[in-house]
Amino acid sequence: MTADLFDGLEAAGPAREVLAPGAVLLRGFARPQQAELLAAIDAITAQAPFRRMVTPGGHQMSVAMTNCGPVGWVTDRGGYRYDPIDPQSGQPWPAMPVLFRELAETAAREAGFAGFAPDACLINRYEPGAKMSLHQDRDERDVGAPIVSVSLGLPATFLFGGFKRTDKTQRYRLVHGDVVVWGGPARLAFHGVAALADGEHALLGRQRINLTFRRAR
Ligand code: SIN
Ligand code: FE2
Image 1 (tube, protein in one colour):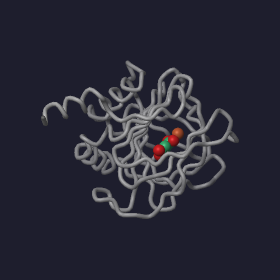
Image 2: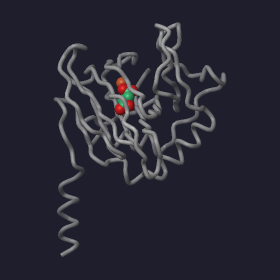
Image 3: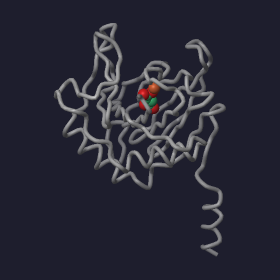
């Protein structure tokens, strides 16, 4: 009885929602690895702490960021770029844990993008009130690879739009463990995150952490 029920769930696979052609939300996909993910994030941020970067226009971002992997996304008065060196420490970014790479690769495969090999993982920390305005991810050399985004901690409202900033956006509530993958025809879609509502998450307290995997070079 129990075995039959379990088999049924296995066959159904992870709960998924299609946001647009090429964009899939995999509900709870990262949950089984939550403990290892959080331990790895602690180790990375001990070496490369979260910091609020400044945009080329001179605004300090509300989201605090760090990176792991061969290159990291950075912004300063000079522009946006992928840099192999953490400008704050002068050292290479912490290595990307195998667990991160495998999670990103399996989520991408599940969404229809086999062979994803990320070389950058941007780690975003949202505290209550922090938000990310609508933008396209277009600093990567080759937009043939998808973006894989893992949500941990407090729930957020993810905005997913079209190819123009002014296109209508759909709103999705992303909770701890959810993974969104967008690539192919959706790769350059505008997206963002609404101001984080205050709350208390059992494992992460008053914050949301997002891992965004890219193929940058
Ligand atoms: C991003 O676009 O880099 C972040 C998306 C998110 O925090 O869900
Ligand atoms: Fe983005």
